Amino acid sequence: MADFLPARSYYAAANPAPASRPPLEGAVRADVAIIGAGFTGLSAALHLAGAGLKAVVLEQARIGWGASGRNGGQLHTGQRHDQDELERVVGLDDAHKLWDMAEDAKALLRGLIDQHDIACSLETGLIHVDHKPAFVRHSHAYAEKLARDYDYPHVEPLSREELYELVKSEGYHGGSIDRRGGHLDPLALAYGLARAAETAGATIHEGARVRRLTGGARPTLETERGEVSAEAVLICTDGLLEGVEATVESHVMPIANHIATTAPLGERLNDVLASRAAVSDSRFVVRYFRPTPDGRLLFGGGETYSTTLPPDVAPIVRRHLLEVFPQLADVPIEHAWGGVLGVTPTRQPFVRSVARNVFAAAGYSGQGVLLAPMFGRILAEAVQGRFEGFDLLSQLPVPSFPGGTWLRKPILVAAMSYFALRDRL
Image (cartoon, rainbow, N blue to C red):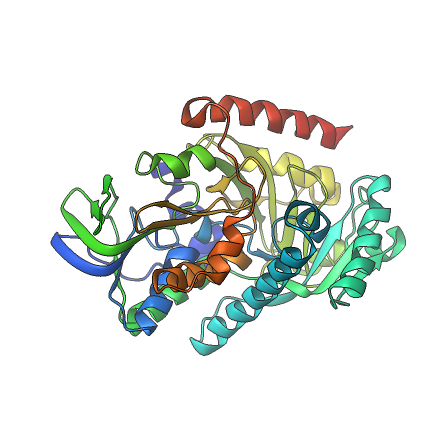
């Protein structure tokens, strides 16, 4: 897993790492033990500590080392699936509750940033672009649906000509702009949440990889040099659990996504983007991009189905980037990295009680920047006996991968290869 050290990312270059937290030593008792110092685990620790509970976070590497500190930083409105799909799956009433939860997640995130003075380069605006002409009608109809049925008039349809005024690519045919979406620096957010959690009284241990989870009335987490026994355990690792809890692993598959940033573009940034909004396209294997505070283009494209990075990520991303923006053919790539995220068979998040006093939230499938801080709060509420949000999320259909942990990878690779081919047709 050494390939995923944050030093390879643009975010790590922009955010010098804070002093390391000590690893776990000896036996510790806590009210709640948390696996993973990403958005979910840090938010859970913050809310638990704020309620007066002793929360101990175990992170196998460094804060924000997983998907939380190395993703595209985009803030999409809603849950992972559109409201049309949620209405079909859970019914109209619960679809509205899930929408409200996602809007509350947006407010929670902005509130945490403001309350704890987290400098994470938050920007508003997110543009959806359609790479096939047939998709534009649906995008425009969905904007109308949100305004009509969900009292959300902030998504504006864009024609091909209107879109080109904002995104200077010939490969898109229309889309929409969400004025309440946005983007941010995710590693800076993770560092800020960690500081806030510790200020509230939580303890974070880095270099504390969990080797075993022992269940019971007081479940125990064992690391190489210590153990934590607690009233409850929260599994907040998304795609990086690796042998600790079989139920989560059979439902959540790790995949690696690739991102790069160009050299600073100066005035040439206007040759590709005419706004500060982020952009995400309609491909199943999505391409996404946005401006950085120092005038670079940050671009994500391409996935691999392993927790080991290819030897050189830059050419993989560059191929996707030049298909969208051939006018940047002479611009060098200065940072290129990858990160492991968790996906589920249905792309719905996996939020469940997986054993006695053991709760999990994982499988955000690319929507974790918005949802993970809220889901961390929901896990903290469940530990305290408030299950409304937890029970709502537990209704989302997330079957295990066929064949469990043994066959999930070849099956997912076959499925993703099919969808990648469909994207090109």
